[in-house]
Image (cartoon, rainbow, N blue to C red; front, side, top):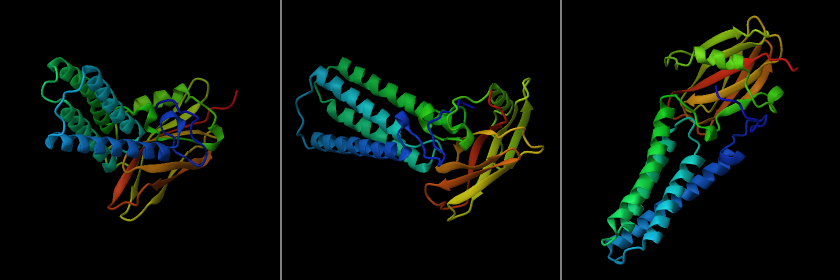
Length: 278
């Protein structure tokens, strides 16, 4: 599991790019996507209407390509995608289509082919990065740092690192569990006596349900209050809060951004470590 940052507070306010709350990042992404789509539609319409006849200067075309790729990257960075929800996929598709249409409409007859290729390669690089990232996340192989799906327990809100014992335990179960598995955990003990319980948790939501809880029991109890880290891997977008963290168990409260329209599940990557303060 990646290192857990101190960028979240006890009430599980999600953090996004640059430490801003995910709601602000999402609003910014929506604005950027709206402007990008509007620009693409306007330029394409003017091109079809014959209003655009003079090719852009190379510098202007390069600037337009850079701004387009930057706007597309901003949408991807600001959209909450850790759960890889349907809205995230729609945003990805609309962003790609808008960027391609905008640059295609700006490449008027008479534009030097070399500049068209250069701008095309710039956009292709940005789009390749975005879609490769998306599909790698979908397979559960990586989580970007700005995805914001992490949670820190109340006793450890100012800590930055998960002990190495947690990393070793996670490495032992790095394959996503089958859909019917609700808990798959490994308990390990390091040479210094630190114990770590880590693995996978899954909770299910019925149609119309928005809130739920996950309970993890420690038997025998840990030696100290646990340091809890949680990362959402799959399922509809949800906020996660460590409601209780005790030596004999942890309770996690989940709240979906939107009530489930049909029965669904949320998959979490979990770690609880009994590291004592030194």
